[in-house]
Amino acid sequence: MWNKVQETVSFLKEKGFVNPDFAIVLGTGLGRLSQIIDIEKSIPYAEIPNFPISTVQGHTGNLIYGTLAGKKVVALQGRFHYYEGWSMQELTFPIRVFKFLGIENLIVSNASGGVNSKFKVGDVMVITDHINMMHEHPLRGTNDERFGVRFVDMHEPYNLQMITQFKAIAQKHKINLQEGVYLALQGPTFETPAEYVMVKTMGADTVGMSTVPEVIVAKHMNMNCLGISVITDLGLEGQVESVSHEAVQLAAKTAEKSVSLLVKEFVANYQL
Image (cartoon, rainbow, N blue to C red; front, side, top):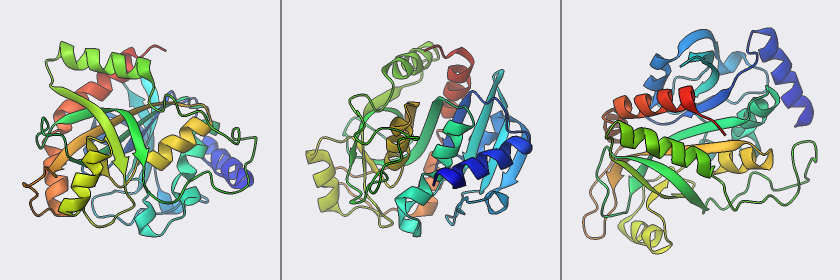
């Protein structure tokens, strides 16, 4: 893993991916966030040494580098998922690369199903914590101390200062920002009515199929993480309706304007 990360980092630096301030993971239906980035470099995943390739419809599959609100950013146009067949180590590989490109700040976004009765489709939620129910762990196996310690402190997976500043921006623009806990299941099936009840009973507000492995690996390397969920469907007890990937993408688009505004202003003004 170490050698592969260093090979990929060297390749990207030679391509001009230098001195980035933020890394952004653009999740399902949120790929258009890339439109607010002044793109200087764009490389298909297939051309990057050791990178997996996204197979999900709606995920563009490029690594982009450019300027957002005066800051240099690297962004994944489409993430990688456990349900696609990648190992946890493979799907989190880009996060390792980000760290050794010199990035300390990671923004992850996703589409999720809401189980909180106060939520509605199209809401934006800042993630305050998560529950890992994916039945596999990205740090399983021999630990390489060059990446981080064996036993990772997860008392603050999502940086509290980041959350506070993000909430202040939402309040300034009168955007109804929800906050809550995200629970990760491996997918690719959407949840059954009983599973939605389980998710809520376990203390989560939303459920999805990503994000948590990326954040675990980021914390392994002491990165600061901000997580954003767009509520694309609801799994309320007694009110569960049919859902499709296309419907999720469509619902995510309704929140794109708000998410773009929030992320742009956050990047412009973020101070740790």
